Each structure stands twice: as C-alpha cells, then as structure tokens.
Image 1 (tube, one colour):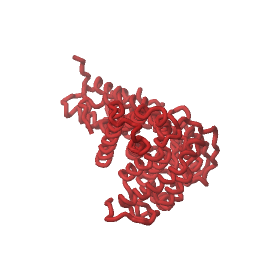
Image 2 (cartoon, one colour):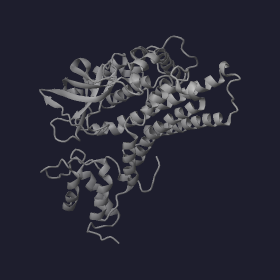
Image 3 (cartoon, one colour):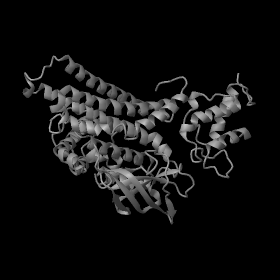
Amino acid sequence: MDARFTELLTPFLKFLGEQEITPDASLRELGLDSMQAIELLFAIEDTFGVTLPDDDMNDATFATAGSLWTVISAAMDAQGVDGTRVTAA
Amino acid sequence: MSAPAHAATQPAGPTAPLTAASLTQRTDQVAAVAAEHLARTDRDASFPVEALAEMRRTGLLGLLVPTAHGGLGGTTEDVVTASIALGRTDMSVAMIFAMHCQQVAALVRYGNQQLRDELLPEIAAGRVYLASVTTEAGKGGHLLSSESALTARDGELLIDRFAPIVTGGEHADGFLVTMQSPPPASPHQVSLVYAHRDQLTIERSGDWQPLGMRASHSVALRLTGTVPAHHVVGEHGDFRTIVTTVFAPMAHLGWSACWLGTAAGALSRVIKLLRGPQSRGRVNLDSELLLTRLSRARQRIETVHALLAHTQQVVATADDLSVPRVQLLLNSLKITAAEECHQAVDGLIDAVGMRHGYLKDSPTRLEHSLRDLRSAALNYSNDRLHLVDGKLALLDAEVRLA
C-alpha cells in the first residue's frame, strides 16, 4: 500500500490510536462511518487522480485497507493513471 | 409455496404444512384473537398476550424456521404476506410478529450449528418468542455501534446492557442483544448475542404510555446475565454483515408490510361502512369530494404495495445488498410506506368526518390506526434515513435504479 494512501485514511479512523494501518485492518472497526464515504472518495480522487467505479461502492470494497487499496490500484490501471498528484483543471 | 385444491377445515396447528391457504388460515386465527382483545390492549397499553399465544399455537412464530428444525420453512415473502394480514386488524400485533421474524431470520442464517439445533426447534414449537435489544441510550436507533461491552470469561459471555425500548421485552422468552465485542476496542465492533430469559436478570424501568402502538408494550430494560460462548450469532464484531443482509431488509420489508396492512384494513372498514345498510340514503356516494378522497387513499396504498413487492423481489435476487442503489431502495420503501400509509388514514378521517373518523367507538377504528401509524416515521427515524440516503445518492452519480 502506498504511504499516501495510509496518510489519507488516517483522519477517517478515529479508533486507530497508535496502531499502524495494515492491509487487513478493518476500516469499519477503526471508525470509518458510511456517512464519510463521499469525503473519503474525494480524498482518493484528489490524491490519486482516479474515480472509483460505481460498481465498487459496496461493503466489500470498504471492508479493509487492503481491499480498498486493491480497488484504487485497479482503477489507476484501468484509467491509465500513474498515481502522481494531478492538478485540478 | 402453492395453494391446495381445497382449504383445510381443521384449525391450523404448528404441524400443518405451509401453503398459501394454511398461512391465511393461521393469520386469520391470530387476527380473530387480536380483534377480540384490541380495544382493551390499546386502552390499557398492555401486551397482546392472547394474540401471542395464538401465534405460538398456530406455528406462526416458527414461520421462518426450516422444516428440518420443525418449522414451517417459510420465506421473506410469507412474512410480508402474514404481516400485511395481521396489520389489517392490529398494527401492534403485526409489528410484534414481524420483528420476531427478523430475529429468527438472523438466527437461521447466522447462528452456529449448536445454537440453531438448540433454539430453532423451540421457536418452531412456539415456546420461544424473541425480542430485539438494539436500542441504547444516547445513540438513537443507530444499529452499528454499541457502548456496552460484552465480556468473555472462562468460555462464557457476560451481558450487562440497558436498552430504552424493547418491544415485548416483558413477555419475550429470549433476546437477541447487540453489544460491543470482546475485548472492548471500538464501539464499531458490535456482536449479536442470544440470551434466554432464564439466563438473565431483567429489571424494568419506567412506564409505557405512548400515543399509539400501545399494545406493543415497548419498555426500558436492563439485562444482566451470562450465556455460553456459542450464543454469539455470526462472527464477533461482524454484526454489520447481519444488518446488511438480514436485519435491515427484514425490518424495512416487515414494517412496511405491517403499515400497509394497517392502511388497507382502515380503508376496508371505511368502504364497508359506506356500503353498509345503515349508510343507505345517508351517504352521498356521488360526492366528488368523497370519491376523490377514497381514490387518494387507495392510490397511496397501491403505491406502497407496488414498492414493497418490487423491493421484496430485489432483496430476493440481488447479489450484494450493500450497494447504494439497493440501500436507497430499501430506505425509500421504509420512508414512503411510513408517510403514505399514515397519510392514507389521515385522508380517510377527512373523508368520513368527525363521527366515524375521530371517535374511538367507530367501527372504522381510524382513530386507533392513525395513532399507530404516527409511529412509522419515528420507528428508525425518517429524518435519519433521509440523511443516509442523501449521502448514498452522492455515491451513485449515474442514478442506476435497482
């Protein structure tokens, strides 16, 4: 997982404490609330320049840090984005 | 499920096979008992013990228990059908039934083998009526968090839980309780645990004096006790999966069915009054205002019925119920049913006026139905669901409809 990814996740995980974010970390248990999903998507778009497909907006995607990263990586491949910061038009 | 060539003439007992006719016979029997007692249970805000006894006797409490465990092996569709039927007579009785079925559905799907083998035959035999303990002070109806921690010790689970509203809590034989998973780490790690009444010390606090739903007798309870480790339903901390796949769909389908039944029952009683011999020559059935009001009530009922049938179909066939378009549909059903069923009865009160719309002793019972249906928008608040739906709508830019 990209360091920028764990950095963008951290503010959403209010029960993370001093733990490190591992791929199998449960995002829900660490405090991710479904009401924050849109803010999380904005953070992902701003950081990686990708839009996650509507089909991936399900519980499985947001289950763990690893599952979310897998979806982001796939979206970057599919959209031909190399993950470097994009500037807004 | 298919209809038999002829209806059984014997009263349906727990062992009669499930058919469309035998399900109707069972709900008719429960509704008849409910009708006999509803004036008193509403007046005294007392639990409908006689109707519950009839649900036990007819096997209706075991509607969702698989036949292998002695139950009727019914489906969600059967629960919806039965809830509409009971709602026509008494919304409190219907809600007690629908919420029990929601608990049974969770046990059937997520209970481990030992718990299922112990508990499901008891439910099927009518010996276990289940209540749900998900409310908690200070969190509203939010299902997915709990501040009360479950303690694991020597292979047992220690429960200490206060709940401000437990429907039928004083009469339940068992409880499904949400608590924070052991060891306590995050209020978002919630487990569902079964506790039998004799495993708990139950203290009741406060009184139950509501506007409507008076017979549902939803009291505040503190539950303390110890249960074996296998009483956890599903994985520890994974209550969310149960909510997404069973609790939320069953709640929204079941509640909407109860409300639809209540509105349909109210319209039926109004039509029967208008067509009855006592109304001959006294009611102008050509009144355009009356006709329009009847049409509006019927239209609202048709809308909810269609939405309920469609949602039921989507829930039965969707691969993943967690996607926004399915969640939005389920929430829309709940919000729409709550609003439209209440407004249908409210409009009928205008249609028939003071005598038959507003007085308790009218055979239309509109006054009772309106009070009961006022709870629908509050029973998991429509306001809260609209906030969730707004966020979900933002996640579905293509507006793809389920």
